[in-house]
Image: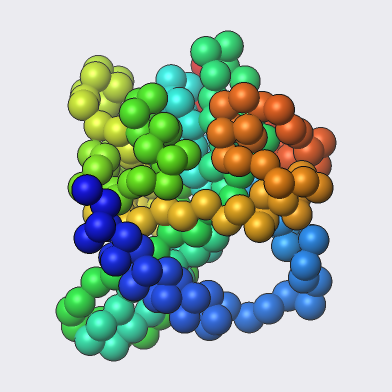
Length: 233
């Protein structure tokens, strides 16, 4: 069933590697990479929360099953292009508490007339158990295996028109200082198992982190607090 999907995954994984190569390295690497990403994810959540047009984002977050935050997605290419980035997945349980983060890459291939490069912050709000489970199992292509829609912006969009829709994932993005809708059709998410190991000090699965919560890292508490604060009351 996933034969063609796996072929596509390999192609996009190569694309991600090429795109991330374009991102300048920060001097501090290895074990601190994960914490740097977690800290940047908090900044992204805070930025979305504080914008008036993100009221619908806050409403959706408050009833979500989880979220994936990409502090930077780099889009680049000429004729054949794509997008890639590294982010964190956190789950939200029935009591409304957020899990510690699991680490993911995202790749999106596209063909067309594309010039230059564009960096943007991207947040995927997961609305269904099906969506969260598929991402955890690494068996997901957005817009294919799961329904994905551009997140609604503004204050005048009724809550019933969003939360009652049969949508697995809503996407919100910030680029060039503006908050916009961003299509994630065709994107593939991949867990970074080596990063889970580095951050938690032992081999753990995404399910251990996000659902079972058998491991924790106190250094992610500020990110979890930021997500809780971003939820609409």
